[in-house]
Every structure is written in C-alpha cells, then in structure tokens.
Image 1 (cartoon, helix red, strand yellow):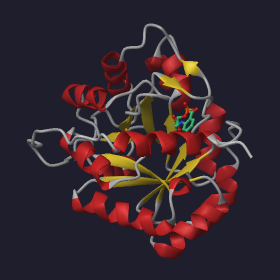
Image 2: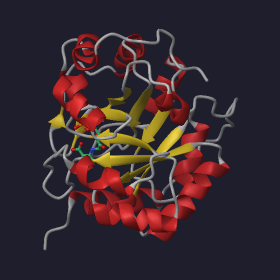
Image 3: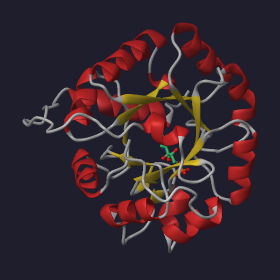
Length: 265
Ligand SMILES: O=C(O)c1ccccc1NCC(=O)[C@H](O)[C@H](O)COP(=O)(O)O
C-alpha cells in the first residue's frame, strides 16, 4: 500500500529533528493571547482562525504575490480571532521565522501549524512567540499525544487537538479531554474535504469543549452549516489566501464584525 501524505510528512519531520537546533534566545514575555478565550468570545457571531499558508501538498503554491505580513494585517482588520501560521518548509513553504515575523505584526493569538511530534518543537514555538500549537491525533498514539499536550500546558501554551474520524475522537477522549478540538474535514489519504465530518464527530465531544472545523470552508452556507452543527469556529486557509481581497471574502463569509476590538485578553 502506498504511503499517505501524513506518513511522508512525519518521516520528513523525524529526519529534520535529527538536525534540530533550539533558537538561542529567550522569550521576552509569556504567551498572553489565549486562543480559547478568543474563540469563546469571537469578533463575529462565529469564530475565525485565519490561516497563512503559502503552498500545500494538495494544491501547490497558492499565489505568486504571497505576503504573510500583509495577509496578517488584513486578517486582523477584518475580524479574525486568531491566526494560524504554517511553519513547515518542505510541504507548505512556511518557516518558524515567518511565525516570528507575524508575531511582531499582530496582537492576536497565533497557532503554530506544523506536524509536532517532539517536545522541542513545542519549546521552539514558545520561544518564537506562538500562543498555541496544533497536535494531530492521527500522527501518534494517544499516550504520546497526551504527553505532548502536557508539555504544551507546561509552557503555558494551548493546543488545538485535531481529529479526523469518530475512532480518533473516541481514542483521544478515552485518555483526556482537550479544551479545543479541531475536526479536520480533509482526508489526508485522498485530500478530499467533507464538511459533514462534524455531524459524525461533534456528538461524541462534551459541550464544554470548543470545536474548530478545519479545511475546505468556502461559502457563507458552509459557515452556517458548521454553526448549526455545533462548531464554535472555522479554520480557513485557501479560500482567504486565493481571494483578491481577504477582507471582502471574510465579510462575505461572516458578515460584519460584531465586536470591534481584537481580543487582547
Ligand atoms: O492543506 C493540505 O493540502 C494539507 C495536506 C496534508 C496535511 C495537511 C494539510 N493542510 C493543513 C491544514 O490543516 C489546512 O491548511 C487547514 O485546515 C486549512 O485548510 P483550507 O482552508 O482547506 O486551506
């Protein structure tokens, strides 16, 4: 059987970690922008994590004039609650330096979007200014996932724990209850996205847990569907990145901002 893209990425990560060097600086201030608080009090009627992603394994490079900082400012101005920054180099053309640069530009929670399999990546995220990191249930067993979750907490960061199926959700919840769960609509074997994943998975998760629907969100009807099915927020990349005006696209999807100020906790 051929190797899935997730398996390939994880193999690359393990190789990269063999040469890993921790940034040689200290973080000046602890994480202060809480993803959880921002999503619990979204600036629209529904939460938005807006993503900065230059390329992806399924779609290649999104646009030639990609500018992460400009995108970050557009996201803040149009009412995003948090920003997700892809830091993987090989498959997504991101970098940890890009996250640092976005950190200097915005006062919103920043999610480090990468394939985290080692505590050092969490420390690096902390040092470089992230407030939260992605932990993917499908990338490891639940014991390791729980250990990494504890490390995230020890750095006073937050985690978005991603599941893609009922089985993954059940396995995670049998071991611990994350504060924020991401339901990834993208099948990492076929790259197909199906927003109906939420109908299968939401009923398994306690109401107190914040739910983020990830991938493939394109229209206002999608947002409405997710909201009606118990999501608190959507994580949106491609639709915003390809838009001529991300500001206008966010208004098309979400309507007008309800709370003017960015959540500064
Ligand atoms: O985006 C991909 O093609 C991809 C492939 C393999 C692993 C992960 C991938 N994406 C990471 C993400 O979680 C998405 O960037 C994110 O959910 C936003 O998705 P979209 O709105 O569809 O760009």
